Length: 111
Image 1 (cartoon, helix red, strand yellow):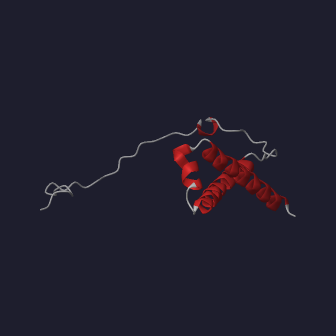
Image 2 (tube, one colour):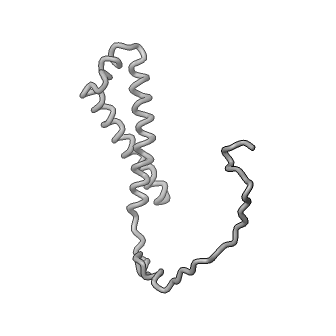
Image 3 (cartoon, one colour):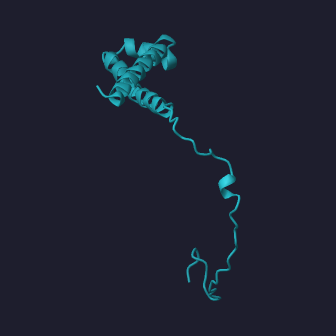
């Protein structure tokens, strides 16, 4: 299996695992009386599944994004950041001629 596909699958599984922990904590601590709503409704399991799945998509995407951003690129030997690249730039101000109509009203006023 290619390394990128393996990285994606592992991080999606981690994200959905974190989502399961998150939903379990929401139910355990009874946030917004969620435990009562889920246990006293015939659609409670569907609601828990949808809550887990939607949070799983978000957590998996964030987890994969973090994993990609943490990868190193060690072959970069160039100078890093700073203002050295702008040290020799000179800013010249230019005069731009603009025609001014005296009789023109502002755009918000009707003629």
